[in-house]
Amino acid sequence: MNALLDAAPVEAAAAEDVFVRFGPGGRLHGVLSGAPGTGPTLLLPSAGLQPRSGPFRLHALLAQQLAARGIRSFRYDIPGVGEAPRMPECDATQATIAALDQLEAMHGCRVFAVGGICSAADTGWDVANIDARVSAVLQLDGLCFTGPWYHYARTLELLRRLPREWRHFARKMRGRMRGNAGLDSNAFRTWPSHAQAREQFAAMVARDVRLLCIFSGGFADRFLHTRQFEWAFGAAARDPRVTMHYWPDCDHTYFGRTQRERLIAAIVDWMARLPGRQIG
Image (tube, rainbow, N blue to C red; front, side, top):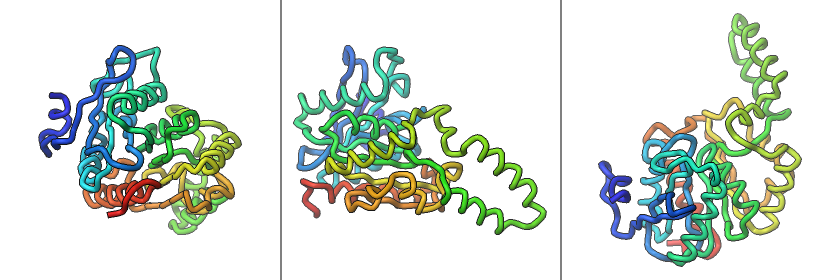
């Protein structure tokens, strides 16, 4: 019943959709879409306060497209979001590992991709660093750090403005630099230090984990220049197992239909090309 509610009213639940309970006491819920196949199953935890269907039903729409390509996905609520109760004993990372355990034990899933937008990207990062079953990570406006290229892009933006705007913009920029703009995400997102993140990124790549990292224009207070990515993560950022896009014309939640379609197409193509997949 809940699986049907998750799919309505825009779409009917696909025949392959399965409602899955997992976590402590089976109190967490999610929808497994797609028939069993090869390659990783994509886990899509709820992002921020968005329920498992995703912002503007992004997860539900993505699940449809993935299923059409023979790729399984699992969209679910983390504790305290959507239909999931608050669970002090179980955070987003623990809930995701519990989901991996249940999907492996009861539904034959063996290898996983994990991630999503914003805090869901952080969950994917954290789980990939502690669970070897994760072979791919989806980072949409995920972990990143400011630096010289970020401030270079900020300066170019200032120079493009009319002279009467410079004083206000410069004052605003000085305030951000004093506060180390880009790390203020720790107010609502828990990130490792820059040095730790570099080590973790390199370790994932060395373990053959594939990463899809997409930064939107809605993340402008943290990401503004493509070279910022390599500055943040080092030589491993150039590895062919890492795919990075910067889409300044898109907003953080992909509100526009064409933006969502572009994102869904990119994720489906990436998932279809992961090791073990048969491109079709």
